[in-house]
Length: 63
Image 1 (tube, one colour):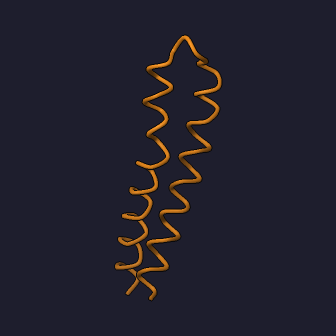
Image 2 (image 1 turned 90 degrees about the vertical axis):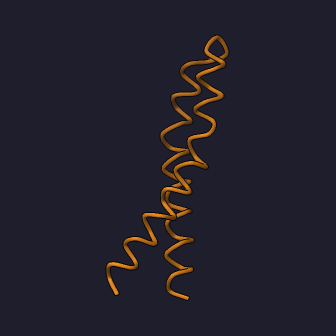
């Protein structure tokens, strides 16, 4: 159960960080840089997976 909690907490933290990093950049680049906006749209899910992995690694080291 502790592992699942670390996984969910890491995923949530990664998602929040991804949104906080990508959203301002996407809004500043605007429609002319659509390719950059599309690529930055993948940032939150990628950081969510990375956060989940980091949460699991941190949880395993504390045992």
